[in-house]
Image (tube, rainbow, N blue to C red; front, side, top):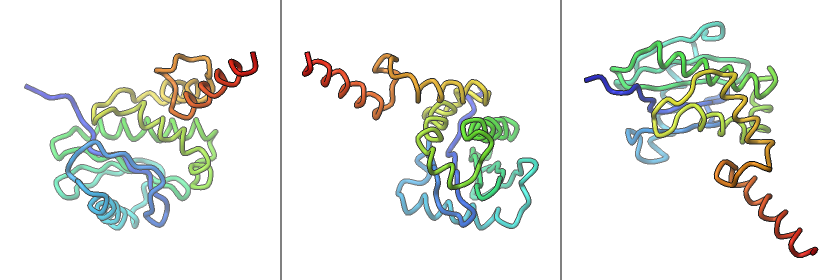
Length: 177
């Protein structure tokens, strides 16, 4: 019986191999040191390639890594050795395009760090617990944008920062009455 395709991690690194945004869904790297070491190995193996126009695929430590570069950002999606490369590439392209939409085409490290909350929400919309939820960049960006702007949404659909802001607003109103 075939299992559902799963993702082990999604990495967004800068041009020096440092973390911008990462999300791990697998216990293959149990400690933070193991995760950082893996990121260094991935970066070292892929930095000399030219993955600017199309996604590239490589094998590393029994994992398939699909990656793409833009400006000073490096996007990576990792799956197990038995995962379908096309599915991993679709997840990568969805993440890449959604980030491009959310950053209004200005995809670089500075802009990514200024909008890190949107990128992390984007990761949450794409994959949950390693299971792929969505790969359509327009839908992902739409959900993230609506979550980041809609303070009237139910508390269960708000981020922690939004929920605290809403609670503070309600408390202020009740004290002023």
